[in-house]
Length: 352
Ligand SMILES: [Zn+2]
Image (cartoon, rainbow, N blue to C red):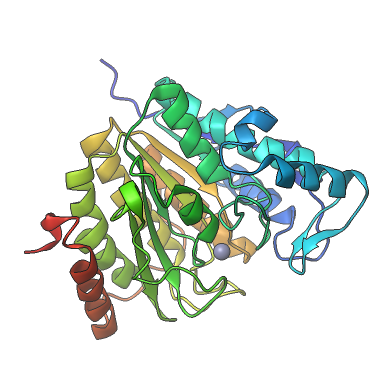
């Protein structure tokens, strides 16, 4: 049996057709990632997977038909925005279908065991998009649609979605709030956009206990986040035993990101990828799907995406960026304890 790790990426020039001009969520983000990977000489080590468009029926896993038609019509009519910060152009509807479809393709490649990991460089991003409205640069919720696809096509009953974007994934949380087939865990800056994601939001009905929010103050570092993941996410997964690990991979918790105030370095993303890999290797034969969300400093984004792939694929190349300091703040420990207190009823493993 070959122990070779198979890591792939999803990229398509058509993702550049969602034109947003000078907006931070712009096509240059993908250009920067692809040219950096090329410069590092790693593109040939990665299987390049072609995305397909999602069907309207697949988008309907997570959105109302009325909203989907609204997006289609607004784009066709040449409107330039869904709200103040969510820009669109005539090509945005098709590009958003391709982003959701690329996310579905990523799940298929991993679930069919054709690849171990797929990082889908999709845009527009998705985690803020709610059932009947787009917001926060997001049109269709790629992560929720891909998770529902995994449930429907492969009968999965336990999917981990870790949302490491610096912003809370209000849309993903809302869509999966009542569903124990997805465990949604978010670490995000608070207070910050979009204002959701308090510790009190833990899911409801059958999904109670399957939403875990860890709001964090500005300045949160690699070591803070590593400690949170080891104290909360890893033990919960030991009990939940995910059949697929998904990451809403926003790279805007980086210290150089212009839209947020966290203190991760590029190496912090390699660290988080390493923990995802440990979880996936332990519980689901290494199956990991990452979907690009935010990340607006092009250099920070490119470096940290490289570090994620370097860790997952096991290239053992020198990581980009700085290691970050080794200190865990007191406020991080108190946040960890508050989250454990809130969730221990559902996850006894959190009580030591
Ligand atoms: Zn974000």
